[in-house]
Length: 591
Image (cartoon, rainbow, N blue to C red; front, side, top):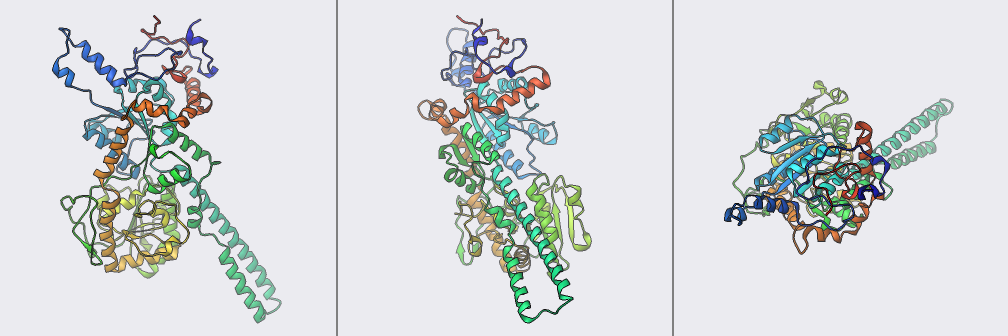
Protein backbone atom coordinates (compact mmCIF):
# COMPACT_ATOMS: atom_id res chain seq x y z
CA UNK A 1 0.00 0.00 0.00
CA UNK A 2 1.31 3.42 -0.85
CA UNK A 3 1.85 5.97 1.86
CA UNK A 4 -0.65 8.31 0.25
CA UNK A 5 -3.39 5.70 0.20
CA UNK A 6 -2.80 4.94 3.88
CA UNK A 7 -3.80 8.42 4.93
CA UNK A 8 -7.39 8.64 6.22
CA UNK A 9 -9.26 10.86 3.79
CA UNK A 10 -12.71 12.26 3.29
CA UNK A 11 -14.60 9.94 0.88
CA UNK A 12 -15.71 12.99 -1.11
CA UNK A 13 -12.13 13.46 -2.22
CA UNK A 14 -11.79 10.13 -4.03
CA UNK A 15 -10.73 10.75 -7.61
CA UNK A 16 -9.76 8.69 -10.65
CA UNK A 17 -6.12 8.63 -11.74
CA UNK A 18 -4.99 11.54 -13.86
CA UNK A 19 -2.05 12.09 -16.08
CA UNK A 20 1.01 13.58 -14.44
CA UNK A 21 1.39 17.32 -14.74
CA UNK A 22 4.20 19.72 -13.98
CA UNK A 23 6.49 18.23 -11.41
CA UNK A 24 6.66 21.35 -9.30
CA UNK A 25 3.96 23.81 -8.33
CA UNK A 26 5.19 27.38 -7.90
CA UNK A 27 8.78 26.19 -7.73
CA UNK A 28 8.14 24.07 -4.61
CA UNK A 29 9.03 20.35 -4.89
CA UNK A 30 6.21 18.00 -3.90
CA UNK A 31 6.47 16.80 -0.31
CA UNK A 32 5.42 13.30 0.87
CA UNK A 33 2.47 13.30 3.23
CA UNK A 34 4.56 12.17 6.17
CA UNK A 35 6.83 15.22 6.04
CA UNK A 36 4.60 17.74 7.77
CA UNK A 37 7.56 20.00 8.52
CA UNK A 38 7.62 23.71 7.64
CA UNK A 39 8.30 24.45 3.95
CA UNK A 40 11.83 25.20 2.90
CA UNK A 41 13.20 28.30 1.15
CA UNK A 42 10.76 30.59 -0.59
CA UNK A 43 9.52 29.20 -3.90
CA UNK A 44 10.78 32.00 -6.09
CA UNK A 45 14.27 31.73 -4.55
CA UNK A 46 14.38 28.01 -5.30
CA UNK A 47 13.21 28.58 -8.87
CA UNK A 48 15.70 31.40 -9.38
CA UNK A 49 18.61 29.32 -8.08
CA UNK A 50 17.66 26.36 -10.29
CA UNK A 51 17.40 28.61 -13.32
CA UNK A 52 20.80 30.18 -12.64
CA UNK A 53 22.49 26.79 -12.19
CA UNK A 54 21.02 25.52 -15.46
CA UNK A 55 22.62 28.33 -17.47
CA UNK A 56 26.20 27.85 -16.25
CA UNK A 57 28.56 26.47 -18.90
CA UNK A 58 31.94 26.63 -17.17
CA UNK A 59 30.91 25.55 -13.67
CA UNK A 60 30.60 29.02 -12.26
CA UNK A 61 27.78 31.58 -12.28
CA UNK A 62 28.25 34.70 -14.31
CA UNK A 63 28.22 38.00 -12.46
CA UNK A 64 25.15 39.19 -14.31
CA UNK A 65 23.17 36.05 -13.48
CA UNK A 66 24.20 36.31 -9.85
CA UNK A 67 23.16 39.93 -9.59
CA UNK A 68 19.83 39.55 -11.37
CA UNK A 69 16.86 38.75 -9.22
CA UNK A 70 13.50 37.60 -10.56
CA UNK A 71 10.74 40.17 -10.37
CA UNK A 72 8.34 39.70 -7.51
CA UNK A 73 4.93 38.42 -8.47
CA UNK A 74 1.47 39.19 -7.09
CA UNK A 75 -1.82 37.53 -8.00
CA UNK A 76 -5.18 39.16 -7.31
CA UNK A 77 -8.12 36.77 -6.94
CA UNK A 78 -11.72 37.92 -7.23
CA UNK A 79 -15.15 36.82 -8.36
CA UNK A 80 -15.42 39.97 -10.51
CA UNK A 81 -13.23 42.08 -12.75
CA UNK A 82 -12.52 45.43 -11.08
CA UNK A 83 -14.82 48.08 -12.55
CA UNK A 84 -12.99 51.34 -12.07
CA UNK A 85 -15.65 53.19 -14.06
CA UNK A 86 -18.65 52.07 -12.03
CA UNK A 87 -17.73 51.05 -8.48
CA UNK A 88 -15.66 52.51 -5.67
CA UNK A 89 -14.26 49.08 -4.83
CA UNK A 90 -13.10 48.75 -8.42
CA UNK A 91 -11.36 52.11 -8.29
CA UNK A 92 -9.52 51.14 -5.13
CA UNK A 93 -8.51 47.69 -6.43
CA UNK A 94 -7.19 49.15 -9.68
CA UNK A 95 -5.09 51.60 -7.68
CA UNK A 96 -3.47 48.70 -5.81
CA UNK A 97 -2.91 46.78 -9.04
CA UNK A 98 -1.24 49.76 -10.72
CA UNK A 99 0.96 50.45 -7.71
CA UNK A 100 2.38 46.91 -7.77
CA UNK A 101 2.93 47.25 -11.52
CA UNK A 102 4.70 50.60 -11.15
CA UNK A 103 7.15 49.05 -8.67
CA UNK A 104 8.25 46.36 -11.10
CA UNK A 105 6.14 43.49 -9.80
CA UNK A 106 4.64 40.99 -12.20
CA UNK A 107 0.91 41.36 -11.69
CA UNK A 108 -1.80 38.86 -12.59
CA UNK A 109 -5.56 39.16 -12.02
CA UNK A 110 -7.77 36.07 -11.74
CA UNK A 111 -11.55 36.42 -11.87
CA UNK A 112 -14.43 33.95 -11.77
CA UNK A 113 -16.26 35.95 -14.42
CA UNK A 114 -16.47 36.11 -18.18
CA UNK A 115 -13.85 38.26 -19.76
CA UNK A 116 -15.10 41.77 -20.54
CA UNK A 117 -13.91 45.29 -21.24
CA UNK A 118 -12.62 45.65 -17.69
CA UNK A 119 -10.36 42.62 -18.18
CA UNK A 120 -9.22 44.05 -21.51
CA UNK A 121 -8.35 47.33 -19.79
CA UNK A 122 -6.14 45.49 -17.31
CA UNK A 123 -4.39 43.57 -20.06
CA UNK A 124 -3.80 46.79 -22.00
CA UNK A 125 -1.82 48.04 -19.00
CA UNK A 126 0.41 44.98 -19.00
CA UNK A 127 -1.51 43.05 -16.33
CA UNK A 128 -1.93 39.32 -16.86
CA UNK A 129 -5.54 38.16 -16.74
CA UNK A 130 -7.13 34.73 -16.34
CA UNK A 131 -10.77 33.73 -16.41
CA UNK A 132 -11.46 30.61 -14.35
CA UNK A 133 -14.43 28.81 -12.93
CA UNK A 134 -14.76 28.51 -9.14
CA UNK A 135 -14.25 25.04 -7.70
CA UNK A 136 -11.79 24.02 -10.43
CA UNK A 137 -8.53 23.13 -8.77
CA UNK A 138 -6.35 22.35 -11.78
CA UNK A 139 -7.15 25.56 -13.67
CA UNK A 140 -6.34 27.76 -10.69
CA UNK A 141 -3.21 25.80 -9.82
CA UNK A 142 -2.00 26.20 -13.41
CA UNK A 143 -2.22 29.98 -12.96
CA UNK A 144 -0.28 29.72 -9.71
CA UNK A 145 2.37 27.53 -11.32
CA UNK A 146 2.80 30.01 -14.17
CA UNK A 147 2.90 33.13 -12.02
CA UNK A 148 4.80 31.76 -8.98
CA UNK A 149 3.38 34.48 -6.71
CA UNK A 150 5.17 35.96 -3.75
CA UNK A 151 1.86 37.45 -2.62
CA UNK A 152 -1.76 36.50 -3.32
CA UNK A 153 -4.44 39.12 -2.60
CA UNK A 154 -8.03 37.97 -2.16
CA UNK A 155 -10.69 40.51 -3.08
CA UNK A 156 -13.25 40.13 -0.25
CA UNK A 157 -13.65 37.23 2.13
CA UNK A 158 -15.63 35.09 -0.34
CA UNK A 159 -12.58 34.82 -2.59
CA UNK A 160 -10.44 33.85 0.40
CA UNK A 161 -12.90 31.11 1.31
CA UNK A 162 -12.93 29.72 -2.21
CA UNK A 163 -9.23 29.87 -3.06
CA UNK A 164 -6.97 30.31 -0.03
CA UNK A 165 -6.74 26.60 0.71
CA UNK A 166 -5.53 26.00 -2.84
CA UNK A 167 -2.91 28.74 -2.51
CA UNK A 168 -1.81 27.30 0.81
CA UNK A 169 -1.32 23.87 -0.72
CA UNK A 170 0.22 24.87 -4.06
CA UNK A 171 2.22 27.93 -2.95
CA UNK A 172 2.89 27.53 0.77
CA UNK A 173 5.53 30.27 0.76
CA UNK A 174 3.29 32.94 -0.77
CA UNK A 175 1.84 35.53 1.59
CA UNK A 176 -1.95 35.43 1.69
CA UNK A 177 -3.50 38.90 1.97
CA UNK A 178 -7.22 39.61 2.35
CA UNK A 179 -8.60 42.89 1.02
CA UNK A 180 -11.90 43.32 2.87
CA UNK A 181 -13.27 46.37 0.97
CA UNK A 182 -15.83 46.71 3.78
CA UNK A 183 -17.09 44.67 6.71
CA UNK A 184 -19.91 42.85 4.96
CA UNK A 185 -21.49 41.51 8.15
CA UNK A 186 -21.78 45.04 9.52
CA UNK A 187 -23.51 46.18 6.34
CA UNK A 188 -25.90 43.22 6.46
CA UNK A 189 -26.68 43.75 10.16
CA UNK A 190 -27.41 47.42 9.56
CA UNK A 191 -29.63 46.61 6.60
CA UNK A 192 -31.64 44.18 8.72
CA UNK A 193 -31.95 46.67 11.59
CA UNK A 194 -33.11 49.41 9.21
CA UNK A 195 -35.75 47.17 7.65
CA UNK A 196 -37.00 46.11 11.08
CA UNK A 197 -37.31 49.75 12.13
CA UNK A 198 -39.29 50.58 8.98
CA UNK A 199 -41.53 47.56 9.54
CA UNK A 200 -42.11 48.57 13.16
CA UNK A 201 -43.01 52.12 12.15
CA UNK A 202 -45.44 50.89 9.52
CA UNK A 203 -47.16 48.69 12.06
CA UNK A 204 -47.38 51.65 14.42
CA UNK A 205 -48.81 53.83 11.66
CA UNK A 206 -51.39 51.16 10.86
CA UNK A 207 -52.40 50.93 14.52
CA UNK A 208 -52.64 54.70 14.71
CA UNK A 209 -54.89 54.84 11.65
CA UNK A 210 -57.07 52.10 13.09
CA UNK A 211 -57.36 53.94 16.40
CA UNK A 212 -58.17 57.17 14.56
CA UNK A 213 -60.95 55.44 12.64
CA UNK A 214 -62.36 54.05 15.87
CA UNK A 215 -62.19 57.49 17.47
CA UNK A 216 -63.99 59.07 14.49
CA UNK A 217 -66.78 56.52 14.77
CA UNK A 218 -67.17 57.26 18.46
CA UNK A 219 -67.13 60.99 17.80
CA UNK A 220 -70.16 60.60 15.57
CA UNK A 221 -72.21 59.60 18.64
CA UNK A 222 -70.84 62.07 21.14
CA UNK A 223 -68.77 65.23 20.98
CA UNK A 224 -65.43 65.00 22.70
CA UNK A 225 -64.92 67.29 25.67
CA UNK A 226 -61.78 69.36 26.37
CA UNK A 227 -60.25 66.67 28.56
CA UNK A 228 -60.63 64.12 25.79
CA UNK A 229 -58.85 66.51 23.41
CA UNK A 230 -55.95 66.77 25.83
CA UNK A 231 -55.80 63.00 26.06
CA UNK A 232 -55.70 62.72 22.27
CA UNK A 233 -52.76 65.12 22.11
CA UNK A 234 -50.91 63.06 24.68
CA UNK A 235 -51.58 59.91 22.67
CA UNK A 236 -50.14 61.56 19.54
CA UNK A 237 -46.98 62.47 21.43
CA UNK A 238 -46.68 58.91 22.68
CA UNK A 239 -47.04 57.60 19.13
CA UNK A 240 -44.27 59.91 17.92
CA UNK A 241 -41.99 58.80 20.75
CA UNK A 242 -42.69 55.14 19.92
CA UNK A 243 -41.39 55.44 16.35
CA UNK A 244 -37.87 54.23 15.61
CA UNK A 245 -35.47 56.21 13.45
CA UNK A 246 -34.16 53.74 10.81
CA UNK A 247 -30.73 55.38 10.66
CA UNK A 248 -30.27 55.23 14.42
CA UNK A 249 -31.42 51.60 14.38
CA UNK A 250 -28.86 50.79 11.70
CA UNK A 251 -26.06 52.60 13.52
CA UNK A 252 -26.73 50.65 16.71
CA UNK A 253 -26.53 47.28 14.96
CA UNK A 254 -23.19 45.57 15.53
CA UNK A 255 -22.97 41.87 14.60
CA UNK A 256 -22.06 39.53 17.45
CA UNK A 257 -20.66 36.02 17.74
CA UNK A 258 -23.97 34.49 16.65
CA UNK A 259 -23.75 36.22 13.28
CA UNK A 260 -22.84 33.65 10.62
CA UNK A 261 -21.48 36.18 8.13
CA UNK A 262 -19.29 37.78 10.79
CA UNK A 263 -17.88 34.39 11.71
CA UNK A 264 -17.04 33.72 8.07
CA UNK A 265 -15.33 37.10 7.73
CA UNK A 266 -13.34 36.77 10.94
CA UNK A 267 -12.27 33.26 9.97
CA UNK A 268 -11.00 34.63 6.64
CA UNK A 269 -9.15 37.40 8.48
CA UNK A 270 -7.55 35.00 10.93
CA UNK A 271 -6.51 32.54 8.21
CA UNK A 272 -4.81 35.32 6.24
CA UNK A 273 -1.33 36.64 6.93
CA UNK A 274 -2.54 40.24 6.54
CA UNK A 275 -5.89 41.98 6.07
CA UNK A 276 -6.34 45.37 4.38
CA UNK A 277 -9.15 47.36 6.02
CA UNK A 278 -10.65 50.33 4.21
CA UNK A 279 -12.30 52.12 7.16
CA UNK A 280 -10.54 53.24 10.33
CA UNK A 281 -13.83 52.70 12.19
CA UNK A 282 -14.04 49.07 11.10
CA UNK A 283 -10.39 48.48 11.94
CA UNK A 284 -11.03 49.79 15.46
CA UNK A 285 -14.13 47.60 15.75
CA UNK A 286 -12.14 44.53 14.75
CA UNK A 287 -9.39 45.37 17.21
CA UNK A 288 -11.49 46.30 20.24
CA UNK A 289 -14.61 44.18 19.86
CA UNK A 290 -13.54 41.19 17.78
CA UNK A 291 -10.01 41.00 19.23
CA UNK A 292 -8.16 40.56 15.97
CA UNK A 293 -4.39 40.94 16.56
CA UNK A 294 -3.21 44.39 15.39
CA UNK A 295 -0.35 42.93 13.36
CA UNK A 296 -2.92 41.22 11.11
CA UNK A 297 -4.75 44.46 10.21
CA UNK A 298 -3.57 47.38 8.09
CA UNK A 299 -5.58 50.47 7.27
CA UNK A 300 -5.64 50.79 3.48
CA UNK A 301 -8.28 53.28 2.46
CA UNK A 302 -8.59 55.14 -0.84
CA UNK A 303 -5.63 56.38 -2.84
CA UNK A 304 -6.16 59.89 -4.22
CA UNK A 305 -3.86 62.43 -5.73
CA UNK A 306 -3.47 65.27 -3.25
CA UNK A 307 -5.63 68.35 -3.90
CA UNK A 308 -3.70 70.62 -1.58
CA UNK A 309 -4.09 74.31 -2.42
CA UNK A 310 -2.90 77.38 -0.59
CA UNK A 311 -6.30 78.39 0.79
CA UNK A 312 -7.58 79.59 4.13
CA UNK A 313 -10.74 78.81 6.03
CA UNK A 314 -11.97 81.09 8.79
CA UNK A 315 -8.61 82.85 8.73
CA UNK A 316 -6.62 79.69 9.51
CA UNK A 317 -4.13 77.81 7.36
CA UNK A 318 -4.89 74.17 6.54
CA UNK A 319 -1.51 72.47 6.89
CA UNK A 320 -0.96 69.63 4.42
CA UNK A 321 -0.09 66.14 5.59
CA UNK A 322 2.54 65.90 2.88
CA UNK A 323 4.40 68.43 0.70
CA UNK A 324 1.99 70.03 -1.75
CA UNK A 325 2.16 68.78 -5.36
CA UNK A 326 1.55 71.06 -8.33
CA UNK A 327 -1.88 72.63 -8.14
CA UNK A 328 -4.57 70.58 -9.91
CA UNK A 329 -6.72 72.10 -12.64
CA UNK A 330 -9.30 74.37 -11.09
CA UNK A 331 -12.77 72.87 -10.94
CA UNK A 332 -15.83 75.10 -11.46
CA UNK A 333 -16.91 77.40 -8.65
CA UNK A 334 -20.26 78.22 -7.08
CA UNK A 335 -21.76 80.24 -9.95
CA UNK A 336 -20.75 77.73 -12.63
CA UNK A 337 -22.60 74.92 -10.86
CA UNK A 338 -26.26 74.23 -10.19
CA UNK A 339 -28.51 71.50 -8.89
CA UNK A 340 -27.89 68.27 -7.06
CA UNK A 341 -26.47 64.89 -8.02
CA UNK A 342 -25.92 61.43 -6.58
CA UNK A 343 -23.99 58.48 -7.97
CA UNK A 344 -23.49 54.81 -7.18
CA UNK A 345 -23.88 51.39 -8.75
CA UNK A 346 -27.30 49.83 -8.28
CA UNK A 347 -25.74 46.44 -7.70
CA UNK A 348 -25.14 47.83 -4.20
CA UNK A 349 -28.24 47.69 -1.97
CA UNK A 350 -27.38 50.77 0.14
CA UNK A 351 -27.41 52.83 -3.06
CA UNK A 352 -30.81 51.47 -4.08
CA UNK A 353 -32.33 52.33 -0.70
CA UNK A 354 -30.63 55.73 -0.72
CA UNK A 355 -32.18 56.75 -4.06
CA UNK A 356 -35.62 55.52 -3.07
CA UNK A 357 -35.56 57.47 0.19
CA UNK A 358 -34.25 60.48 -1.69
CA UNK A 359 -37.06 60.32 -4.27
CA UNK A 360 -39.89 59.56 -1.86
CA UNK A 361 -39.11 61.58 1.25
CA UNK A 362 -36.28 64.09 0.72
CA UNK A 363 -36.63 65.48 -2.77
CA UNK A 364 -40.25 66.69 -2.36
CA UNK A 365 -39.06 68.81 0.60
CA UNK A 366 -36.17 70.28 -1.39
CA UNK A 367 -38.33 70.91 -4.45
CA UNK A 368 -40.89 72.74 -2.33
CA UNK A 369 -38.23 75.29 -1.40
CA UNK A 370 -36.35 75.26 -4.71
CA UNK A 371 -39.04 74.70 -7.36
CA UNK A 372 -36.62 74.88 -10.32
CA UNK A 373 -33.90 72.67 -8.85
CA UNK A 374 -32.88 69.42 -10.54
CA UNK A 375 -31.75 66.13 -9.04
CA UNK A 376 -29.62 63.95 -11.34
CA UNK A 377 -29.18 60.29 -10.39
CA UNK A 378 -26.26 58.38 -11.92
CA UNK A 379 -25.29 54.77 -11.51
CA UNK A 380 -24.59 51.59 -13.45
CA UNK A 381 -27.07 48.71 -13.62
CA UNK A 382 -30.28 50.62 -12.72
CA UNK A 383 -33.27 48.35 -12.20
CA UNK A 384 -36.72 48.95 -13.63
CA UNK A 385 -37.89 50.11 -10.19
CA UNK A 386 -35.15 52.75 -10.18
CA UNK A 387 -35.98 53.86 -13.73
CA UNK A 388 -39.57 54.40 -12.69
CA UNK A 389 -38.39 57.10 -10.28
CA UNK A 390 -37.50 59.25 -13.30
CA UNK A 391 -39.90 62.22 -13.19
CA UNK A 392 -38.74 65.18 -15.29
CA UNK A 393 -41.79 67.21 -14.28
CA UNK A 394 -40.50 67.08 -10.69
CA UNK A 395 -36.88 67.70 -11.62
CA UNK A 396 -35.89 64.14 -10.60
CA UNK A 397 -33.81 62.66 -13.43
CA UNK A 398 -32.50 59.08 -13.50
CA UNK A 399 -29.58 59.36 -15.92
CA UNK A 400 -28.04 55.87 -15.63
CA UNK A 401 -24.36 55.14 -16.20
CA UNK A 402 -21.98 58.10 -15.94
CA UNK A 403 -19.16 57.95 -18.52
CA UNK A 404 -16.89 60.16 -16.40
CA UNK A 405 -16.86 61.43 -12.83
CA UNK A 406 -15.81 64.86 -14.00
CA UNK A 407 -18.79 65.26 -16.31
CA UNK A 408 -21.17 64.48 -13.47
CA UNK A 409 -19.59 66.30 -10.57
CA UNK A 410 -18.16 69.42 -12.18
CA UNK A 411 -21.61 70.74 -13.12
CA UNK A 412 -23.47 70.02 -9.86
CA UNK A 413 -23.35 72.19 -6.78
CA UNK A 414 -24.02 69.54 -4.10
CA UNK A 415 -23.70 65.76 -3.96
CA UNK A 416 -26.45 64.05 -1.96
CA UNK A 417 -25.74 60.67 -0.33
CA UNK A 418 -28.70 59.89 1.98
CA UNK A 419 -27.40 56.48 3.05
CA UNK A 420 -29.41 54.79 5.79
CA UNK A 421 -27.18 51.72 6.07
CA UNK A 422 -23.86 50.52 4.72
CA UNK A 423 -20.25 50.01 5.74
CA UNK A 424 -16.76 51.00 4.69
CA UNK A 425 -15.66 54.32 3.20
CA UNK A 426 -18.07 55.63 0.59
CA UNK A 427 -16.36 56.10 -2.75
CA UNK A 428 -18.90 58.64 -4.00
CA UNK A 429 -17.92 61.00 -1.19
CA UNK A 430 -14.21 60.64 -1.91
CA UNK A 431 -14.86 61.19 -5.63
CA UNK A 432 -16.88 64.33 -4.90
CA UNK A 433 -14.14 65.77 -2.73
CA UNK A 434 -11.52 65.21 -5.41
CA UNK A 435 -13.66 67.39 -7.70
CA UNK A 436 -14.22 70.10 -5.09
CA UNK A 437 -17.90 69.13 -4.71
CA UNK A 438 -19.41 69.48 -1.21
CA UNK A 439 -21.45 66.56 0.13
CA UNK A 440 -24.57 66.15 2.25
CA UNK A 441 -24.86 62.71 3.83
CA UNK A 442 -25.81 60.87 7.03
CA UNK A 443 -23.59 59.60 9.87
CA UNK A 444 -23.64 56.22 8.12
CA UNK A 445 -22.40 57.82 4.91
CA UNK A 446 -19.67 59.80 6.68
CA UNK A 447 -18.31 56.87 8.68
CA UNK A 448 -14.59 56.47 8.17
CA UNK A 449 -14.17 59.99 6.75
CA UNK A 450 -14.36 62.10 9.92
CA UNK A 451 -10.80 62.87 11.11
CA UNK A 452 -10.08 61.57 14.59
CA UNK A 453 -13.32 59.57 14.80
CA UNK A 454 -12.34 55.90 14.73
CA UNK A 455 -15.01 54.66 17.15
CA UNK A 456 -18.50 53.50 16.29
CA UNK A 457 -20.84 56.46 16.61
CA UNK A 458 -21.59 57.38 20.26
CA UNK A 459 -25.14 58.53 20.89
CA UNK A 460 -25.70 62.23 20.31
CA UNK A 461 -22.53 62.81 18.28
CA UNK A 462 -24.47 64.33 15.38
CA UNK A 463 -25.73 67.13 17.65
CA UNK A 464 -22.29 68.78 17.53
CA UNK A 465 -22.23 70.88 14.37
CA UNK A 466 -18.56 71.93 14.61
CA UNK A 467 -15.55 70.40 12.91
CA UNK A 468 -13.98 70.45 9.47
CA UNK A 469 -15.67 68.24 6.89
CA UNK A 470 -16.38 68.65 3.20
CA UNK A 471 -20.09 69.35 3.58
CA UNK A 472 -22.71 68.23 6.12
CA UNK A 473 -23.11 64.75 7.56
CA UNK A 474 -25.15 64.76 10.77
CA UNK A 475 -28.75 64.60 9.50
CA UNK A 476 -30.79 61.53 10.43
CA UNK A 477 -34.25 62.60 9.23
CA UNK A 478 -35.58 63.56 5.80
CA UNK A 479 -36.45 67.04 7.07
CA UNK A 480 -32.97 67.76 8.44
CA UNK A 481 -31.32 66.27 5.37
CA UNK A 482 -33.36 68.48 3.04
CA UNK A 483 -32.57 71.55 5.14
CA UNK A 484 -28.82 70.81 4.97
CA UNK A 485 -29.01 70.29 1.22
CA UNK A 486 -30.87 73.57 0.66
CA UNK A 487 -28.48 75.55 2.86
CA UNK A 488 -25.38 74.22 1.13
CA UNK A 489 -26.91 74.81 -2.30
CA UNK A 490 -28.00 78.38 -1.59
CA UNK A 491 -25.43 79.72 0.88
CA UNK A 492 -22.30 80.74 -1.04
CA UNK A 493 -20.17 81.24 2.09
CA UNK A 494 -21.08 77.84 3.51
CA UNK A 495 -20.44 76.24 0.11
CA UNK A 496 -17.03 77.91 -0.26
CA UNK A 497 -15.96 76.76 3.22
CA UNK A 498 -17.11 73.20 2.48
CA UNK A 499 -15.25 73.24 -0.83
CA UNK A 500 -12.00 74.12 0.93
CA UNK A 501 -12.64 71.37 3.45
CA UNK A 502 -13.02 68.88 0.56
CA UNK A 503 -9.38 69.45 -0.33
CA UNK A 504 -8.33 69.20 3.31
CA UNK A 505 -10.09 65.84 3.72
CA UNK A 506 -8.31 64.33 0.71
CA UNK A 507 -4.94 65.52 2.02
CA UNK A 508 -5.55 64.27 5.54
CA UNK A 509 -7.21 60.92 4.89
CA UNK A 510 -6.62 59.68 1.37
CA UNK A 511 -3.26 60.82 -0.09
CA UNK A 512 -2.21 58.14 -2.57
CA UNK A 513 1.50 58.03 -1.88
CA UNK A 514 1.15 57.84 1.90
CA UNK A 515 -1.62 55.23 1.88
CA UNK A 516 0.03 53.08 -0.78
CA UNK A 517 3.34 53.27 1.10
CA UNK A 518 1.52 51.89 4.14
CA UNK A 519 0.36 48.89 2.16
CA UNK A 520 3.85 48.32 0.74
CA UNK A 521 5.42 48.43 4.18
CA UNK A 522 2.88 46.05 5.69
CA UNK A 523 3.43 43.46 2.95
CA UNK A 524 7.23 43.80 3.10
CA UNK A 525 7.16 43.28 6.87
CA UNK A 526 5.53 39.87 6.38
CA UNK A 527 8.85 38.57 5.07
CA UNK A 528 11.17 40.46 7.41
CA UNK A 529 12.72 39.34 10.66
CA UNK A 530 14.33 36.06 11.61
CA UNK A 531 12.50 33.22 9.92
CA UNK A 532 10.34 35.59 7.87
CA UNK A 533 6.82 34.52 6.98
CA UNK A 534 7.13 30.98 8.31
CA UNK A 535 8.24 32.20 11.73
CA UNK A 536 5.30 34.58 11.82
CA UNK A 537 2.91 31.77 10.95
CA UNK A 538 4.52 29.58 13.57
CA UNK A 539 3.25 31.98 16.23
CA UNK A 540 -0.24 32.33 14.73
CA UNK A 541 -2.05 29.69 16.77
CA UNK A 542 -5.53 30.92 15.90
CA UNK A 543 -4.86 30.61 12.17
CA UNK A 544 -3.37 27.16 12.66
CA UNK A 545 -6.48 26.00 14.51
CA UNK A 546 -8.71 27.30 11.71
CA UNK A 547 -6.66 25.41 9.15
CA UNK A 548 -7.27 22.15 11.02
CA UNK A 549 -9.39 19.90 8.79
CA UNK A 550 -12.42 19.89 11.12
CA UNK A 551 -12.83 23.66 10.60
CA UNK A 552 -12.32 23.74 6.82
CA UNK A 553 -15.87 23.23 5.59
CA UNK A 554 -15.46 25.65 2.67
CA UNK A 555 -12.56 23.61 1.28
CA UNK A 556 -14.42 20.33 1.40
CA UNK A 557 -17.56 21.92 0.03
CA UNK A 558 -15.58 23.32 -2.91
CA UNK A 559 -14.03 19.93 -3.56
CA UNK A 560 -17.46 18.28 -3.36
CA UNK A 561 -18.92 20.73 -5.91
CA UNK A 562 -16.08 19.99 -8.31
CA UNK A 563 -16.57 16.25 -7.88
CA UNK A 564 -20.32 16.61 -8.40
CA UNK A 565 -19.97 18.73 -11.55
CA UNK A 566 -16.97 17.06 -13.19
CA UNK A 567 -16.79 13.60 -11.65
CA UNK A 568 -13.29 14.20 -10.29
CA UNK A 569 -11.17 16.45 -8.13
CA UNK A 570 -8.72 18.05 -10.55
CA UNK A 571 -6.56 19.62 -7.87
CA UNK A 572 -3.01 18.36 -7.58
CA UNK A 573 -3.11 18.78 -3.83
CA UNK A 574 -5.38 17.25 -1.23
CA UNK A 575 -5.79 18.47 2.33
CA UNK A 576 -2.54 19.57 3.96
CA UNK A 577 -0.77 19.44 0.59
CA UNK A 578 -1.32 15.66 0.20
CA UNK A 579 -1.45 14.37 -3.38
CA UNK A 580 -4.79 12.72 -3.97
CA UNK A 581 -4.97 8.96 -4.17
CA UNK A 582 -4.11 7.63 -7.60
CA UNK A 583 -2.49 10.87 -8.74
CA UNK A 584 1.19 10.68 -9.55
CA UNK A 585 4.01 13.03 -10.47
CA UNK A 586 6.94 12.16 -12.66
CA UNK A 587 9.34 12.95 -9.81
CA UNK A 588 7.11 11.82 -6.91
CA UNK A 589 9.44 9.02 -5.84
CA UNK A 590 11.03 7.96 -2.62
CA UNK A 591 14.72 7.36 -2.20
